[in-house]
Image 1: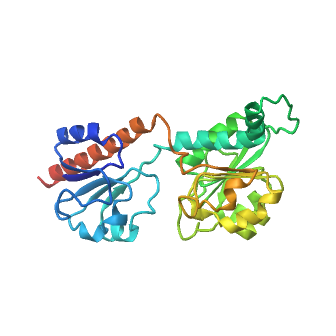
Image 2: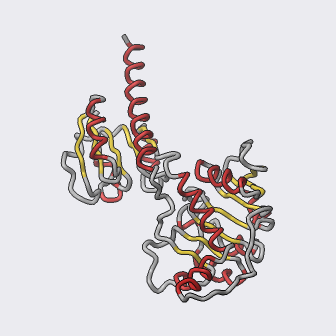
Image 3: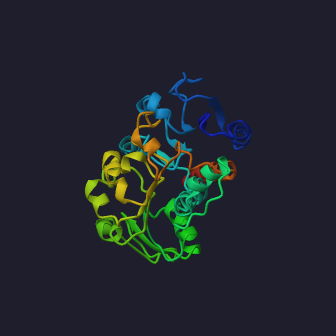
Length: 309
């Protein structure tokens, strides 16, 4: 297969030689916005992230295989992919562990008043804080029960939390106390101390957390968004912040977050620059996913060839 590999795969330099040993012809493009090092017609497969934002997918007339380095599919025209029977894979499971750890970190930072102690340390001030909360016994709503949501469920369960999953396709899963459909979100929100968003961004989930949904959250509840920024109506969130316990926001409707956004200076808001996915195990997991999918593609082709002999 003629493969175009982009710098979105940070381990590409080492991985290219491995791909060549599997029989692939490989071209490398460091920055996805740059001109391709080959013709569009040459490309049969790509390993990329946002390549099609700069290079329309329709120009890749022989494309039949896509491996994304991201977990989301929102940067790809999925209707085109399905219509043209292009095989597509995401980075399923690669970033789930660091994202789940980040969710734990963010909630504990708020519950244990991390900013208060950090400021006191900087000022060499010895002052106790009596208003600290525990994770134990808290009711946690995880909206989006894929790999990221399930890793969150495992970790919050370990702290003694009660977990309710909300998903577009509910199922039985031992990692959740129960799992219900998205149509039951309002009821779950009204009972939850912590709400974690790990949903993909779709037409159905855009501004899922709107003014109505925020009004249904408990006073003092915490929102964690490690999904996509547009799952949350930012203006509605800011209006509700005074009565909420805090928000841990790693993604935003507009990125980078504007310097004049009030979110930067809100006392109970933790702002990070779409960074929750970063972990020192990512490179190993991503390489494993890429190689496994490529090998399966070759295996399927070989099986198909044998069946036609």
